[in-house]
Image 1 (cartoon, rainbow, N blue to C red):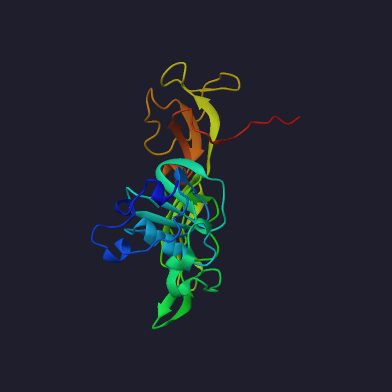
Image 2 (tube, rainbow, N blue to C red):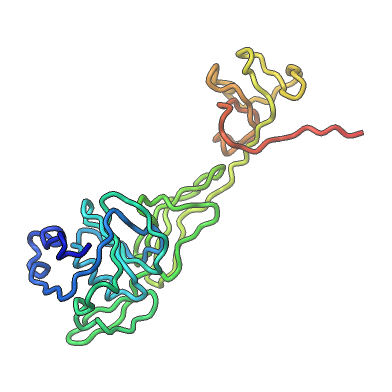
Length: 265
């Protein structure tokens, strides 16, 4: 679907942006409605129109298309075309379907990966715009709703994988040097089921291996404290926010490591 096919300037220009309203679009781009790309996002810009978004793609090196979310006035400048996914209120458009005259003096720029073209007096020049590589931290995944992006100065939010906990602030920042700086690390939660529970009778703890009761205990301070809700026991320290290892009662349905008992001849 193209702009001339049903999407007018009222949909892509801010009401007070006269420059946007005056644009002469010689060739309307093809829009794929309810579709977006959630990976390889070079830059993310907010509070700009769709036509401004198209222009930003044209002046950004390695841009092949855009996402535009009208409800958020949010523009994604995209790198290599990846698998497109369905997303309500999002529009994808390949930049090759637009006339590059919208980029003005930058339409034939030769900026390198990570750069964008800007006008300096009557000439164009290239300046850093995004980190070339995607942010990465061991045992962490992006917590960004619409996927991670790489703007210079951007701080992208992360969360730790299962059984890891956050040490520091959950962000990775793209520096002016076009390198990433992580503000956190994901530390493994040392926790394991030990095979002890009181599922059958509340408060009566038995080993699942042979049903026997306890002949010793190693409860952490304040444990057990889950009553009918927490009927299985694990062995932990940092995971349980303690300074020493010990037993902790917990709900039985979380995925954790486990400790096995082995008999030797």
